[in-house]
Length: 406
Image (tube, rainbow, N blue to C red; front, side, top):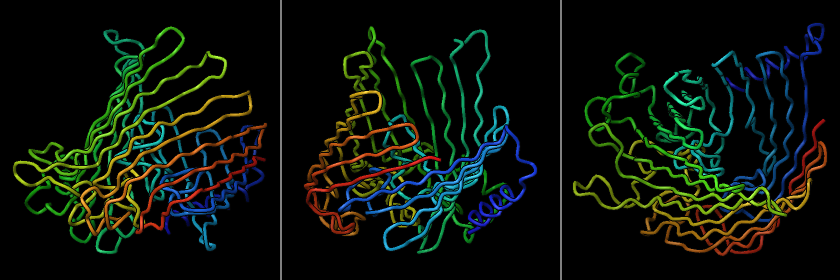
């Protein structure tokens, strides 16, 4: 509620001070509608898996180093949200953001094991710092950035809210090579008083035992490497996330890997990606790891409003997908995807998606057309999958999205 109040007051103040408006200021507005005939297992056409329709109105304002957006969303059954509203201040190498925006912490264009656009965006304050090394002994393309996040996850601790603190470090030592290191910590103010000891534990301390054993940490790393071949480009990427820790290092891993092929100079430029996600965790010798470990902490649910923050397939599941797009003309694009999934591989009755093991496929084909400030896209999907916990059933799904900027 605090973020909503801040955003509303901020916009009222901006639009009420007309005398200070100058040619360096910019105001924009957009209206977007999205509709689907049935729920689908992933974020598509700006609809999350638990939504069938959305009307979105955005008001944006920018002035020098300050930018902001008020986003009003009317979802199914007239539910109102302020998702993707924010205030952003950038000065030099620093960027401060307050609001509710989607974050994808990975090198994939659509997926992440740690933070993705699967769940509703978190109410958060984030600070990002990025700068070139500017060192003579390093290539000129070397870069470094770090993003620090403090957010609220709704209903994740005994039905109440918890705090999620995290950080992601990106290092690019070469033009085509990128590394990421990240960590998130879930905790609540009732059990963890704010003091230097708590902050130190959240960042680097041991949360397996002792007074801070209730804190839930997830951490991992990723890599992306591009291989230019004549006028084409291959990119390989991967990510590993540990649900638990051993010796202050991540353990109980889930994995994601992908291969992206970009063909920009053929008659119909195409980008195609093969992506594998596996959130199954095998048993470990000490018994701390095992099936349903991923996203399954005993104290905190790694969710926001009941939907997992990481991979849409949730815990103990696999996904193999080929997806991409082809540019048919300057204004017209063709989108395609085929995904084969197995959900709840070990028949865990408390799984968030399905009470029993379910396997199937999702095939999607779509067209998007852009003309100046107008965009329209249509999609047809066939889903051969049943997930009783999320009301996802087999069938053909039609979806359409349109947006207009003013």
